[in-house]
Image (cartoon, rainbow, N blue to C red; front, top):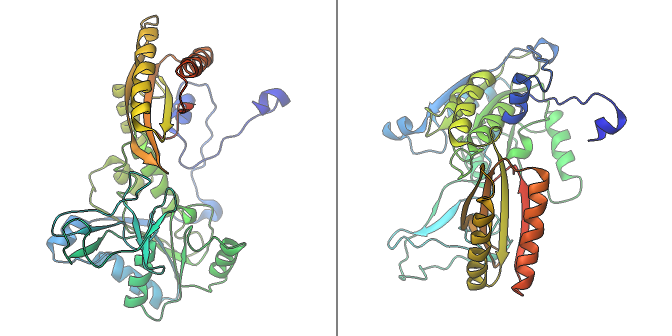
Length: 393
């Protein structure tokens, strides 16, 4: 590390540190310094969690709960600013036939395509391919093709319909592609050029607007339901970060979190900004599942445009690794299996995960062995290795 070379102190600063980092402070590998107050003595925002299942039972089918709608109305009347957060761009998350259940998927990737209303077509957020929506279902010929889910584009449209006099801006990868567009939006928001800022995770942290007194989290469950062992941690971090945008000036802030999973510990403890309680729950789960920091993971990703070739050869690699693992008492091989997103940009994806006491030397040996093995098989398979990956997707 650079700090070791320069013989200097390394400071890691975060309101939501990684579980592994905080664990090291408890083991006294790191020193812990805690800042208990916000900058300039600002008060923590008042946070409320809304169970969207109850809203549906009360026949509220809107994207916005009654609590969030009323809070937006009150904040606009006070001429203060609002941030609405949804970590998903586009208008609808997928388009499906209501008669046969057909879902419009990308031909290059194993993902549903997202409808973008302003462009009038479906877009794959992984490879960028586009597709027009036919007037009838390509599978059964039904005319009952419907849009499901919501993205930032739909939130923007609904806000403009419900609050036509509010000055609204949307910030996501679709609206900030032009040079300096991000900086222009930020400057305009800072000078109160907008009343409502709608965005994805790019607005979740590092924004300091003194007049933002309301933050609305439209759907807190998105990251929570990812097939990844860090899903709870990522949800907690994101919710705490975006909640921290409210009430950074002299005015008290308010946060409304909408969710279908209010019982989740990640959501419960983010609403009280209680990192230690979240950590206690998360570390128990990591311990029971033998995940970092109690063990190391080595993620091996394999991809090829030839699916049969990939499946055949990854089985050979899997057998090789399982035989090698027998030489170690504490290394286990999980897989091979298809990746959670099994196809991206016409390339099929499989993975193998090694769990255990994986040293740098062991990882290097595995890397060298796999490359030599695949070279002998004369195939066209791409391989990548990641120790303690941030995501298993």
